[in-house]
Each structure stands twice: as structure tokens, then as C-alpha cells.
Amino acid sequence: MQRLSARSFSALATIGMLFLTGCGTQSAAPRGEAASDFGGRAIRAQKVMQLTQVHGETGMTLLEGPVFGEDGGLFVVDVTAPEGKPKVIRVDVARKTSRAVHTDGTGAYTSAQFSPYDGRLYLSDFAHGEIVSLAPGGGDVRTFFSGEVDGARMNPDDIAFDREGGEATVLAGDLAAPNGVSFDADYRGLWFSELTENRISYLRLDEDGGVTSRHTAIRVDGGLAQTDSIAVDADGNLYQGLHGRAAMAVYDRHGERLATVELPSRVEGLESATNVAITPGGTKAYMTVSGPAGGYLYSFDALAEGTRQSNGG
Image (tube, rainbow, N blue to C red):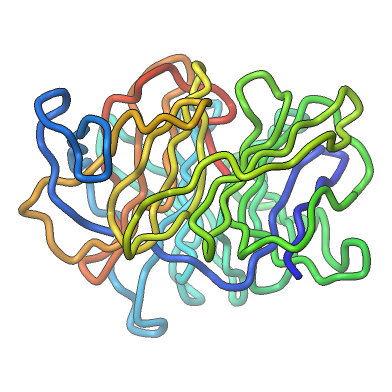
């Protein structure tokens, strides 16, 4: 059984899942000129830079969890990086340069998020069922949480911070390989994706963080692609990453398909678009894309400004 939990101190909500997810590729038309085959208009993403190559030790690379730090740097994790290779990377998107921030011998980090409470960078270690944190520039590694939640071992994938906090608690159970998680724009509920059912579900929360209702909100018609991570912009639009196609589906909060973010048709060897960070207070979005061709950062114009819910996780 997969379960959704909320954890205090930094008051983060985490999702456990059955297995690590990947991410996809297809063609795109210029923004506003054509409809996507997924529905809505097509938004063309542009390559920013390559960050990683396929690792010989693991046979793949998988970028995830883009998040902007207070210094303006974009932090990205490489889930499958082996010991000695960068597992957390800081990118200067203006200069198109990158540098290693952290590596270790065991972690498989599937998300990154800066805490609004202590300013540290929190990482979900799927392989070891832990949440760890780093100093903003790297170093000073601390284990924030390790062990069971309500009697079950946690396999955290994504992280979202709330505004108040509480004790560790299970919010939902019997989920279908939950993956992405994000509060909505007003913190009135949680969106989360379930990979093996290709759906986005919604938990409505009360003032104390308790669940008042749960329902399937959006069924993602993705063909071979499956639901990965989620981000939410200032207008409440959802950006759903896809495993199995290097594209993102964009919905409004009522479930209408607004657009599909896609790569240029000439791009080959990219199979996954896991997650996105929209510049806080701006509309430039940066998407992590991976596959046999390596790990890349692509950019596009989001439909609304970025907030904490569109920055990390």
C-alpha cells in the first residue's frame, strides 16, 4: 500500500512510491500556432544546456527536482548519479554554467526543495527512505527524517512545504504509485499524481491540515506516457511532468487541458520530462529532461508567474 504523509518541523508533505520514475520526447509547434495532439495549444521548449551524460555505472541519467535558491541559482538532482559524480548540481542559467554541490556513495535523490523555515535544501532519498538536508551552498548534511510512518517504511519521491506544520501523519492510503505532490495556489488542498493510474488526485484540507475530501481530479490521457511530478503556478495552473515522453501537460484548476509543453521535432534520445521550476515572480520556466542522450535543461514561457508551489519538489 502506498501512502501520502505530512511531516512537521519544516512541515513537509511527502509521497512514497513503488519505484523510481523516468521521464519523454515528441514534436512541437510554436506557441499559439497549433494545437497539441494531447489537447490545448503547443508550447515549444528551447534547450538551455546539457547537464549530464549517461553514467556507465548505472546505465542512465535522470534529472529531477529543479528549484531556485535565494542566490538565484537553479539546483537540480541527478537521481541515478553514482558515487563520485554530482548528485546535486547548481546551474547558473544566465551564464549556462554548472557546478557540483553534493555527492555521496548511497543516495538516490528524487526531489529538491528549499525550506521556508530554515533556508536549507531538502532532498528525498527514495532508495533509503530518508529526507536529508544540506546547507544552501552544499555541505553540513543532516538527516531530517528516517524510518517508518504509521508502521510503514517511507519511500519519499517529492516534497512540498506547507505554511504551518504539524506532526507526521498519513493523509491518504491505497494510492497507485504516487509521484508528484504540490499544494494548490491557496494552500487549501494538495494535488498529487498517481503514476500507474495516470491520474491527478486532490485532497481538500481544513484549517488544521486535516483531509476533508479526496477525489480523482484529472485523468491524464497520455498514451504510453505516465504522470510524474507536479508544479502549480500563481494562477493555480498545474504542470504535469510525463514519464515516457519529454513533454509536460498543463491544466487549469478545473481540469481543462490548456497546453502541452514539447521539445522541437528534431530532438532525439530524450524520453522523460520529470519536473519544472518557474522563476519566482517571473514566467520563465525550466524543465528537466532526460534519456539516452543525457540530462538536459529546457526552458519555456509559463502561463503565469512562479511561486513556491512551482519551485522545487
